[in-house]
Length: 193
Image (cartoon, rainbow, N blue to C red):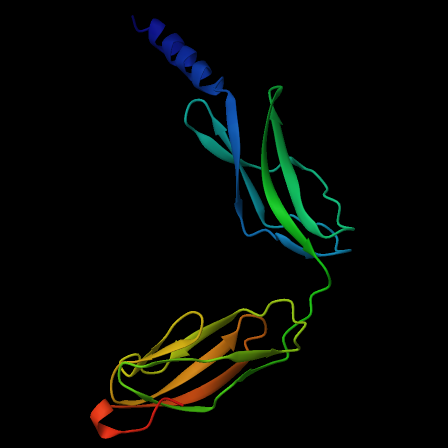
């Protein structure tokens, strides 16, 4: 009995080692946005091989297709990995755009705003230059108890007091502010301006 034990262990080990490659997955912090004429790069890409046994490992000897970088549009990149004559692929999409025009400035339509509790006002942010590629912004309120601000710049007055609304460009982090004064309805006869 004792002489069979080592052979049994060896046999079981060989079964585990023969697990077949079943798929590959992609992860990591790799670039997906390029400008026309850029050199394609997949730096930061992590490829993980998964096996029929349920195990997985990170691999480095994979191949990556080279997308056309001379024209704008969405491009599919194919990643291939071969092991023991079994090849698995995975894809991801990159975006190739015209030359990026960066934001230089952001300006709010109003620098001060008077409101009454319960009212709403839309703030408008002007991005310069007007041809900027990424015009997306974020909005914050310094005092959410006084006034809230939505993702698209809608101010909602909630309680009497003052708050500062700040708009920030995603590209460049440029900011502008608007001072918001909120009064109770019975304390003012002014309309929202």
